[in-house]
Image (cartoon, rainbow, N blue to C red):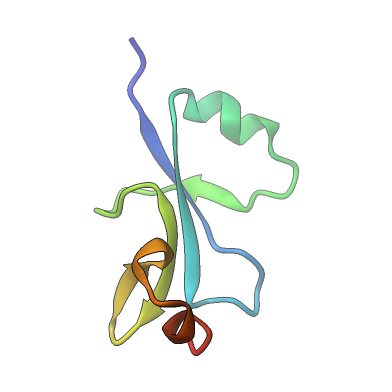
Amino acid sequence: MQKVTRLRRVPGSMCKDRKIIKSVRDAHAFLNKQFDNTWSIYDGDLKAGTYAYAGGQWHNVKNLDPSVLAHV
């Protein structure tokens, strides 16, 4: 049984206030298949999902109101 590893991706150079966390079973194979090295191993405490930085902390975008998300 393989351990589930979480990976982190920060989309684009202009978007430093967002990040994507993804859970995969075989991180070695996943990282070897990428061509642009945007994914890296994440050892933080956030679960899988897309996050936006607002108010000094990371928030899951699924939990944010669309009007608030437009200003983040």
